[in-house]
Amino acid sequence: MKFVAQRVLCAKLTVNGQPVSEIGRGLVVYFGIRVGDSLQQAQKCAEKIANLRIFEDGEGRMNKSVLDVGGEVLFVSQFTLYGDAKKGNRPSFTDAERPERAEPLYRAAGEALAALGVPVRYGVFGADMTIGQTNDGPVTVIYEI
Image 1 (tube, rainbow, N blue to C red):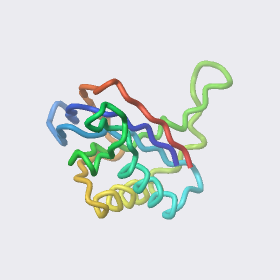
Image 2 (tube, rainbow, N blue to C red):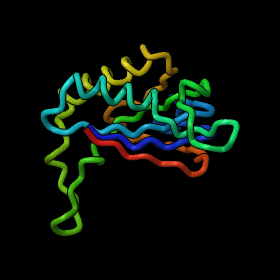
Image 3 (spheres, rainbow, N blue to C red):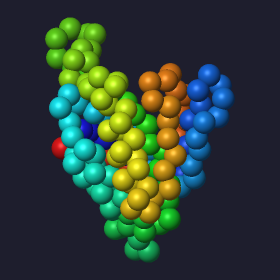
Image 4 (tube, one colour):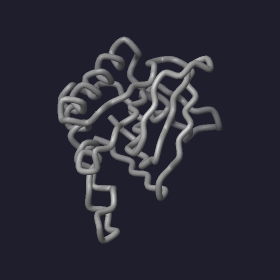
């Protein structure tokens, strides 16, 4: 599993021009699932996201988590995180898990994150989504397990 977490002031996700999810201060997390990934990895990713200290404390140091600042997470499934463009210019997505196995793991990771106390808003699995976000910093962290 791999995720890209971006610290934001706000973000809004739409599908076919219709609003689906919106958050204020928090994280937009793009979440990719690789062939063979497990429920245990989904839980570990949720714990990492909830506790990732990338928000500033009173002294301006990145020392607080999304939990500490009362932030939200916009959680977006993104199989393209496992795109491989080593050969040629068109990425191969053979490392990305098939949708019927990936969707339950995506949901499980989001539910585990919510169970840790983080308000989670979701994208629409498999949909063509439009995401507008106002990055804060910008701060972007990539994590793979």
